[in-house]
Image 1 (spheres, rainbow, N blue to C red):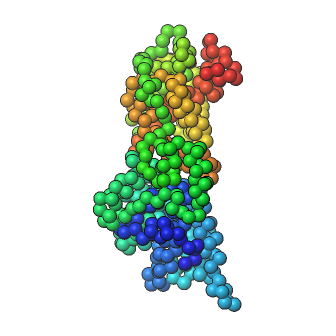
Image 2 (spheres, rainbow, N blue to C red):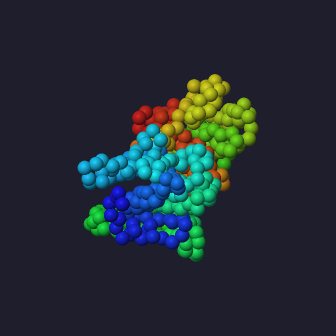
Image 3 (cartoon, helix red, strand yellow):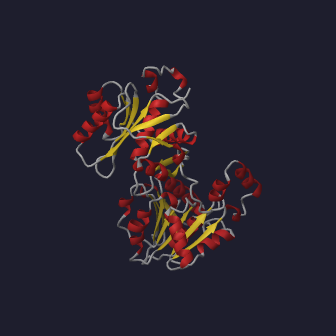
Length: 429
């Protein structure tokens, strides 16, 4: 095979029983190389009459591109039959994001799950879902699995665990109960890769919690490791008010939604209490109305909780921001959400909750979103974590609270309020 020799753990992963094999692997076990070998095997087994179709699906485009280039580099080295004649066995079709077996025209194509509905249509002999814990379960059930029907196609689903609520754990349990019918699964710890020195693993263990290490390197399913917000229950302890306290000023975060998502409006009282704790005293969530009606509700909320606002101005948010600025005044600020400033917003909010610097109302929508909010993946190209709600859930309340907290601590809005001339020191001093 035109790839390096697999170690025993990788071979056992590919030898799992069942049509749909699930590899729960520790970091650097070698799961990607295993899947590359399987893609090459299936593709090369085709004939001119029965060309094979293999798809490699990663959570984001950058990840699938990296695998494509790595596999193409490996295979191009084997385009020589060691005789005097150059023989082209594999061809890299860069524009089509595919590697083609020249003799049979079988193809390995590389895709991302970012826009899953666009994956529909092809019939596949093999589907590989790489870093599957960061791919939505609906991509597998509703998009990829039906593509395997007509060719009796196989699947290789690989990834590092993300707790028991992630769909990978469900597949693993199905395989435990009925091995090979149709799922076969195994957990493969990093230490099973003979190329990883045990001393190096101990270095990583020293810099991680026990739960983090067991998840990332021992491939164990552990709940709560990827939970972003801690001490939520300990931070509950204020009443949700219909209007702000007399003489108090507030900073309001506004995250916009209309049909499937919600508009969430969260107001923090600028003045901390004697324990240097900020209180979340205003909260609303609504959807289904026209933008005009929603804007009126937002303006009315801000009048009841006076002070500056921070609006998510991403996409449709920009014209809404302009309208609110005209209706409320110069204290309305815009923040266009990117993956990076979302990370900053979320991590700032996470630290405030961990240090118990926020007091939350007993609002089930807000608390539910905080509890389910998680790290959804990792930006391999940019090198920072990505956050959001699990598939099918919402994070509108979390984002509104994060915007209000960001306005309080990062963009100096608290310094504009009477009695809070903090300058560059930040709200918590």
